[in-house]
Amino acid sequence: MKYFIQFLCILSVLSCADTKNHDNEDLLANAKRIHEAVITIDTHDDINVKNFTDSINYTQRLETQVNLPKMNEGGLDVAWLIVYTGQDSLNADGYARAHENAMSKFEAIHRLCEEIAPDQIGLALTSDEVRSIHRSGKKVAMIGVENAYPIGEDLSNFEKYQKLGARYVSLSHNGHSQFSDSNTGEADSIWLYNGLSELGKNAVYELNRVGMMIDISHPSKASMMQMIALSKAPLIASHSSARALCNHSRNLDDEQLMMLKENGGVVQTVAFSSYLNTEKDEAHSAYMKELYKNVADSLGLPWYERSQFRSLSREQQGAFMENYPKVMALGRELAKSRKDVPPAVDVSDFVDHIDYMVDLIGIDHVGISSDFDGGGGIEGWSDASETLNVTIELVKRGYTEEEIGKLWGENLMRVLDQVQAVAKEMG
Image (spheres, rainbow, N blue to C red):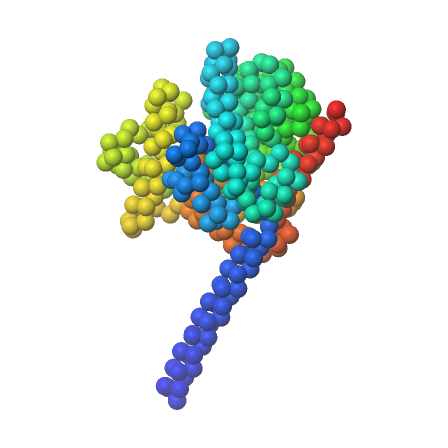
């Protein structure tokens, strides 16, 4: 009898294991089906113009977190490629240098879509074009402008950028611009305008008129509130998460989230470690910081903290941007063989923010972004090739195909449609 009972117990354990494996297989199959059925949009991917040449470009599986092979591997359909310019002095010389930098990034994106790989990726200007290019089997590029600083003080440049393909603009970045205070003012409580400048208020009208979405991810809370009061169209946060879960000035607090809901906008939850879980990020980052430094030293490469970036010379910045993905990739690979690495912020932490914001403001106002090649990336979604893992976690949490479709892109496209409809009404 004793051995018979043991035999039954073994059968029970094996049966449970089979059931669990079967359940996991069903979940994975369902997630893959949904992932292929919906349009997956990542609203924030930084670029380096050196990766848009005849010899080095996104048709190759570069060390960048985003490129065409990795998008294909992970099933990422749409990448918003970013025209980013750092903050500099508020004068004509600074604006001119920034404008030149912005133009080089616009040109790089157009080169990818029109010369390098027109058979693999197309530039979309509307949601209809997103769907059309996606149906053709190609990947989709869209353009966002991170920091309106290169616009200078000539508001007609917004229309110029719109004609070049830009479909969203942030009025500031890390530092106060000529248009808007930045969230970075929280660090020292020094503000230039207590929100928007007069030029910034006029910029809101102009962005509505030309049909570009206004991005509130970097401006200060006061700036964001004034933009909502002035804008005739919904706004977006292109890459921000929930401040209630992670108290970082780049995240949106509950009041901001509720205002965004009332405005009809959308917050694109960002897979940026330090905006998701401060404690886990600090412990893991301290370890990895030493590891990256050791990797850079072993390769004979100069290495800096991202916080030092603005203080570097142009040459140092260029070298850092070129070496950064290489060092990061080698460091992550090395970490896999070590047992003492503190746990990293992961996809579960990321979807915790999605859950929180969906519960607070509803499924129609939340989306997804990575900030790849600009500091983003977490365990499980470290580059575009791992995009499916986000969908798997959403399926685990009980989201339906319709809800996952909204999170991955439908909400963002709805806002784009509404912004462009307002522009038509304004003539």
